[in-house]
Amino acid sequence: EKLRKHLIDFGFGTKSGIDLPGENKGIMLSLPWHQHLLANISFGQGMTANALQMANAYAVLANGGELRKPYIVDAVVDPETNEVKKMEPQVIHRVLTEDQAMKMRMLLVGVTGDKGTGVNARVPGYVVGGKTGTAQKVNPNGRGYLKGAYISSFAGLIPANNPEFVIYIAVDNPKKNCYGSQVAAPVFSRVASYLVRKNGVT
Image 1 (cartoon, rainbow, N blue to C red):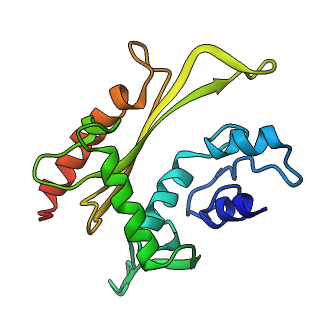
Image 2: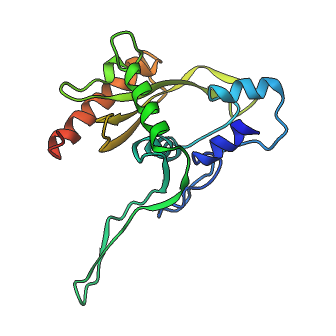
């Protein structure tokens, strides 16, 4: 019950309400959960999530523990009056305390340390925190998983001590390697490096 509640608190299994059509809420099975499902869900099997849900869950850590409603349009300009209506973040609810969110960010920094799986996500001059992911793809025509088929990912925050950007990289069916550390983390590094320099983040 606790694990399911926390996952829903982070936005899994529900629609985010983003201003785009066709959003899928993903799969979050109802209770009761058998022991094997409890074990599987703890590392990401037995449920589904879309890329926006993943990014928004990490944004909880960046936003000091608040789950916010994501949006695409930054502002709307009235063509007759030129009045600008700026979109503002909407807090859905608080998931963590600010202290808990900060501690989680610091734990994620360890993933990009010398012995972490996310070392390839580093950006010189910035503190990066995040997590690699290597997910087996479900067999759509039967039970189990497709052989040799993966989604490799890296979700990260930069700068991790005072986040300006949350970036989620997912590579569908990588060909040479399958691990998020080898496939997605280097892409994160390049995207994050561009964003912080373009926006003058210090």
